Length: 351
Ligand SMILES: C[S@@+](CC[C@H](N)C(=O)[O-])C[C@H]1O[C@@H](n2cnc3c(N)ncnc32)[C@H](O)[C@@H]1O
Image 1: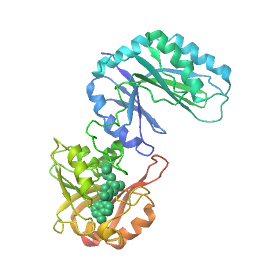
Image 2: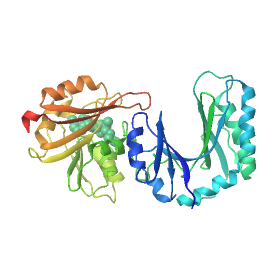
Image 3: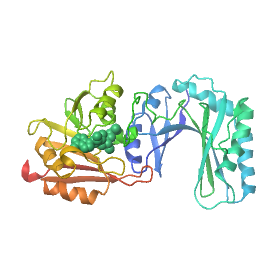
Image 4: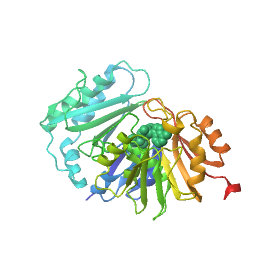
């Protein structure tokens, strides 16, 4: 099987973590805004097991000279006319994908002012691609969601267009385990990236004290003891549904009064309820800083916590007052919000 030129799309801010994961499967050429460009020497189904990528695409064509006028779209149409779309599509089989889609859809985006819309871009390439493949074309112009089919992605940056084909039948970030969801449920690739930052050693005791639907402990999927707790019994019910078949232990517990002995946890990973969608409840409703004292108490002296924090300066000041030291900060952008993945450890004086 010949090498494949691939493009992984990620959440903004975790490109380098996705690249780190991808290096186990191929050679990374470069990362860009929400992108990792790489070559996979031996394409196989394991590419679709990548956890930190939102999605992975086969690069089909790059086209230069796409300026801001509608006349430039002719260059794109020409590039599609010379593309062997059947060959590109058939390459998905090397990754273990053997579906028989009946429609083609295209999702386009561009940077900068242009005299055309994303729908003009999509239809310019989508109609001839569908015709070449003998399939129906689904235009997004009327706002109807695309049915499951062959999904192409077109991005135009400066004067360069990249046309790529999604390998999997659905985006990689859409996990099969997520049967139950709730407001504030974490984007799974972001959970995977946080676990990569935490890097729990085999056998570690890992706790998510705000587990909600269970995303983080389920993503952990490592030879470790994973525990998910949440103050809300309905969150634990959702996590139990999602975690069916996993080895995670779930329990109702208030993160202001954790049911663990001092020093009993090696790694904490979580996104606390300090965002727009979910507010702190129980012991943290009036005194959210109690969490930092509990965290300081339950972490082993060599332990660490990796947390997703909005307004990180404010929360880290409280963490430091409770005896924790900040060792790493990584800003991310997700659905218009700009939280940070932060790592805190027991301050050296405590160890
Ligand atoms: C942002 S959500 C976490 C989402 C979770 N990571 C997921 O993927 O579904 C925050 C969670 O904190 C929980 N919570 C609120 N106050 C709490 C407290 N005092 N102790 C423990 N959990 C609490 C909420 O019930 C909610 O499930």
